[in-house]
Length: 523
Image (cartoon, rainbow, N blue to C red):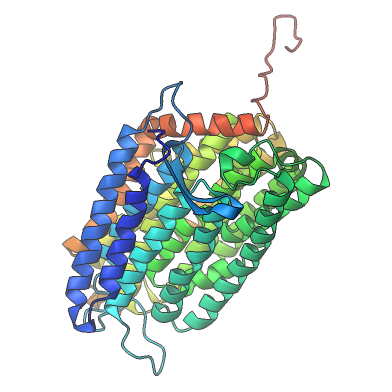
C-alpha cells in the first residue's frame, strides 16, 4: 500500500475525469445517454472508493498515508503528481462520491421544463444544456477526489483552484434568476483566497529549503516566529473563505440560493469541506506554532459564526438561503472542534464534516424537490404539503432533524464529540456554542412547520408525491445518517489514527482529567 508508484488512487481520480470528457463530447440530442453515462460513471467511482474504504488498514502499525503514488511533474521545483490518503481524506472522499450519484438522480429532469424544472428561468433565458450539466458534475467530482487525495502541496493548490471552474458554470449557467451575480461573487471570493494561498505556497517552498512540495517533507521544517504566522494566515484565510467561517461567509448564501439544488448540495456538502479539511491537513501540521497562536481568535470566530448564522437562518424566508445559513453555523462547530486541539474535538470535527455532507446534501435535495413542485423558494408560498406529499414530508423531516442533531442521527454524535472535546480545554466556548443547538431546533422546525403543516394552500393541492427515482436519490443518504447515528464506530476507527497523528504534528495532547479525591482536593 505504500508503494511510491501505486496507481490505486490515480485510477480513482481519473474515472470521473474520463466520464466527464465522454459526456461533454456528446451531442445535445444525446441528453438521455449523457444522464445514463454520468450515473454509471458515478456508481463505478462509488464502488471503487468503497472498496478502498473497507480495505483501509486501521491497525496501530499501519502507515499514515496509504496507497501512495508519486510521479515527477515539474522536476526543477520538486513538484510531483502525488496521491495518498489517511483516514481524514478517505472518509471525505467516500462522502463526496456517495453524494454525486444522489445528485445525478435528483437532477435527472431538473433541466426539462415539461417535467418541472426546479426554478423558473430568468426572462430571456435559453434552453440549458443537459449534457453540459452532467458533464460538469463529473468534472467537479474529479477535482473533489483530487483535492482530498493530493499529497503534494502544489498539486493540492491546482485542484483547489481548478474546482472553482465547474462550480462557477454550474451556478452561472444552471442556477436561479440571480445566478450570474452569485457565480461571480463565489468565484471572486474564492480566487482572492487562492491568491493568498499561492503566495504562502511559494513562501513555504522558499523558507523550508526542502526543494519539495510533498507534505511529508515539509512537516516540521517551517521556521517558527513571524514567518510561520504569515504563511499560516495565507493558508488559513483561503480555507476560511472556502469553509466558510464568519466573517468570510457572505458569498455562501447567494451561491447556495442561486445554484441548482444538486449543485448546492455539492457546493455546501463537499466543496466547503475543502476549507475545514485544509485546516487539518495543512494549517495544523505545517504551522503548529502559528496554529496555537491564532487558535483563540479562531475559536471566537467559530462561536460567533454558530450564533450569528443561526439567528440569520431563523429570519430567512428563502428556503435555500436558510439552509445555506445553517451550514455557516455548522462550520462554526467544525472550527471549534479542530482548534480545541483535543482528540475528541478533532475526531468529532472530521465526523461532523462527513455527517454534514450527507445531512445538508439531503436537505438541499428535498428542498429542491419541493421547489420543483411549487416554483418558489419562499417559505410563505407553501403550507399543508404533508397531507398531499407524505413521502416528501417524511424525508424532509428526517433531513431537517439530522440538521438539528437529534439524538439517533449521526450529526448528534459528531456535535456531542465536538462539544465534549472543546469543553475539556475551553469550557466557556463550549457552553456558549451549546446554545446553537436550541437555535437549530427553532429554524429547522420553523421551516418544516410553515411548509408542510397547517392548512393546505391551493397551490399545494396540485403537488405530486415523490416517484421512485426521487426517493432513491434521498433515501440512501437518510439511511447512512441513521446508521452512523446508531453505530459510528466503523468511521471513527478510520478517523482516529489520522487525528492523533495531526495532534502529534501540532505537539498537543489531551488535557489531563481533573477529578475530586476523598479529602475534597483535586488531582
